[in-house]
Length: 447
Ligand code: GDP
Ligand code: MG
Image (cartoon, rainbow, N blue to C red; front, side, top):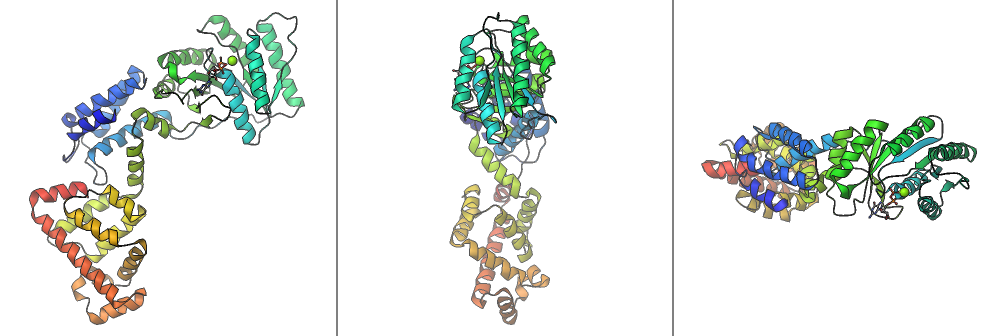
């Protein structure tokens, strides 16, 4: 995606605002990316419309390039769709909390039951496992092995001489819950049978388990690799059982995770966890923002945007740029404001990486390279020690004022002199840029 998208975005560069025309191609690429990531067609359409509405007419932010800005809009939309926060796990007010695992065969229910138990144990809980997959003895044996490997309690029950069927399933479930109470377990994880395809017998059995156990959580376990199939079955399960959440397994494969978006869209239920491998600890709470990066395949850009948006105040930098480039130039007061803002970003090196290295900034970068963080603090202290009048008109700062400022800020007169010299230089440089029309516009877009 990235490469194509970059090309599409090239057209956006150098434009004052995002228009219907210049975003068209970018949106087409995004749509393809979403579909490739297994996002349902209708979901993708909805999203694109939202993004178009949001993006068109937006001023190009000074802190971000148009590319980054559009990506940011997309990211925000996707995160909003997935739910901003990591979903909560529901616990019963009176233990045991019952968790019913649902899903097709091979989706990862048994493995996930074990992972969930391990996760609960880590959180100080005492889970008990039970398998009611009575149709496949090997499946129950599998859960036993998993339980042993994480030292979790399991209720095995006696199944000898009883025919596999819903009555046995119900008996095991009831016994397991009683056993959980007796042995002081606060959670009961019920691993169920799956089918290769949804059938009504299975659904009936699941519905019976639901009314018998009144589970706090009914988690739909979906194999991320199966894409649209997972979406369809999620919808069916949700209709019949009213799911409370989704676990997306096999996210360690090359699935892009678009299924997460679609499942969320069709069920309205959040993805609560993801499975990232076969081992019991390959499991983590779901973070919408990470999946979004994965879907878009743009990890690095995301990080940059987050950083920039956290710290850079668009309006302020715009104002500063305007002032700096105007005939009046920027005052020491403006300079201090700008310094403060820049410092919020972190180290100078990281800021420099975000600034373009051409035009008037080339010089600034070099200048800033020689300044270390401590010097930054000193510069601010010096400006702080000036009076408002001095900050607004540096020309009145005479020798005796310099002395006072140096004493007040705990620096030397030389340092005050140096700062004033640098300031005057920068001011002149900016004003020079301001005179050239084209250059000015470019500088404004870049600052
Ligand atoms: P069930 O039929 O729904 O109980 O599915 P299982 O728990 O038996 O899992 C089916 C297969 O998927 C097994 O080989 C698991 O090891 C594998 N599996 C489950 N979760 C994950 C995962 O998150 N990542 C990977 N790579 N494999 C998984
Ligand atoms: Mg199983």
